[in-house]
Amino acid sequence: MDLDHTRAVRIPGAYEELKAPAVGGVPAQRLPEVSETVSEMLATIERDGLSAVLDYSRRLDGWGGGPIELTRHALAHSGDGLDADLRASLEAGADRTRRFAELQRRGLSGGETEILPGVVAGYHYVPVASVGAYLPAGRFPILASAFMTVGVAKTAGVPTVTACTPPVSPERGNAAVLYAAHLAGVDRAFVIGGVQALAAMAFGLLDGQPVDMLVGAGNAYVTEAKRQLFGVVGIDLLAGPSEVAVLADDTADAEMVAADLLAQAEHGPQSPAALVTTSRSLAEGVIEEVERQLRGLATREIAGAAWRDYGRVLWVEDAQTAAAVMDILAPEHLEVITQDDEWYLHNLSNYGSLFLGPWSTVAYSDKGITGTNHVLPTGGVARSSAGLSVARFLRPLTYQRVVREATPHLAPHVERISAFEGMAAHGASAALRSRRFAHHAAQSVPSPATNQEAS
Image (cartoon, rainbow, N blue to C red; front, side, top):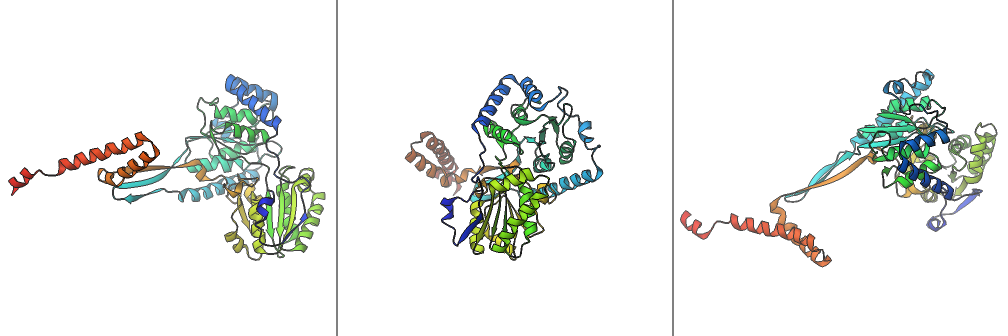
């Protein structure tokens, strides 16, 4: 979420940076040592199979060597030991995420049209056959991840969704993560973490069937494994550290803005957080309020480092400048807290997900409680890509249906284009149909003798 100076020349109005990042730039996602380690692990697992997966699980995650797959009964009862209120919240998140995904699915219906008489072209949506979802359970077990990956895939119609989550003890995985996966409709769940989990799903080491697509967030090693496995399987996206930007004017509350910036900064010490505002007094108030809130924040070591190294505050002279700056930043999460939020809704283009008004905190979506997906593009990728949705699990497959009578409107064009390109076989394929059509047409015309007899 960098203010790219090659793009900044297009900003129409004046702006000033009141707090600059100490480090800045896009946080490094591919350290050489991470890439090398992942490459070595993937090669070893591809060569040695499940035994290598289990060996890495024992050495890296402290797995005790028991069964790695949960039975259906164990998965269904994974939440029995959880607090009843937490279970209710997870059930609410699963239901709301599913309902929003159902809305998206209804909007993807396919269609067909007659391009010209006798030539029909169309498309329909077909889900991928199998998906592997990675559900992190490290420093922060992100419980809603299962709703966003497993649940949305199942709503899209994916027949088989497998989930992997790292062990949190030698015997078991995180109960709340597994219960969330159960609520999301997972078909099979395994207690395996990290690179070895992605490799096991991609290479078909868990059930003999490689998955077609890998989804879900993770640490730098998990992200790099997805990058290296892309091509062997499909992936959702390569997400970096979580990002937030707030676009506000003098109607916004400094305490609320600061709280929302810190809520995303606590994801990790490389998580960028930015404020773009038309109000100098708000900018100054937010800077002071962030420091005040950090003093009492349990995660201040993480959030404080992120704010120091990647936090940014920009004053801009007007709404048009604010929108231009924000489209350059292209944040993963974008909150708009102004007196004219609707104007920004229709004039902003580059973001992962938009949160309109002071009551629309990113935290609601992060935990799955508003239904929208939290697997979103980072590092400026929102300029060209969207977040995970039902559409990502569906392939818009095209088809065409051509009748014989349409041949004269198609074949001659292809013959001429192919001749110019030098692609003889393409031309021959079309020319064959031209000849067959001409032959059929000639046979269909009554002979003169037949006409005389008829008269």
